[in-house]
Length: 192
Image (cartoon, rainbow, N blue to C red; front, side, top):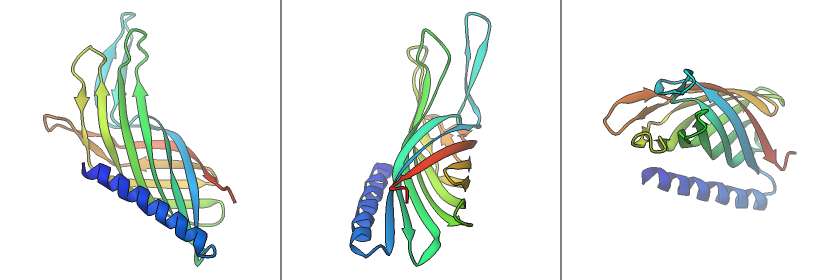
């Protein structure tokens, strides 16, 4: 419940800043953010065995994601910007007869220091809302809770390398590392 309230406050915050930016003669520049990427890492949470003798390991930190949010830049401090986003991160198995998947909603808040017009360095925080391992009838679904953890990013123009340090806890209290390294692309609108 606290995470949902946080998301609602974040949305109100971004909306308020966008209105203020339009009224303040461009002292604050607000942009719409679209981001996507892939990440790998974390502890093994499931190993799936196939009838052909092969197997696949699912890790808590792996998956592809897409996110939307906002970017704020201050005209008085051109090297500083702030991005906030919420998205969906998804990982599935290669099984033909089952849709076993791990889903979660990453919520990121990251301030950046622009080294120059092309390079940026970001250090922020993230949490993953509602991480769930769905076993599609092959067992009981597993719901996790996510801690808040740091997220690091080094970007060049619209591409970036990321590192997230976060953990999940299942219903029995067992903790799993969901830390990951990844690559992302992002686009802001308007792009000027």
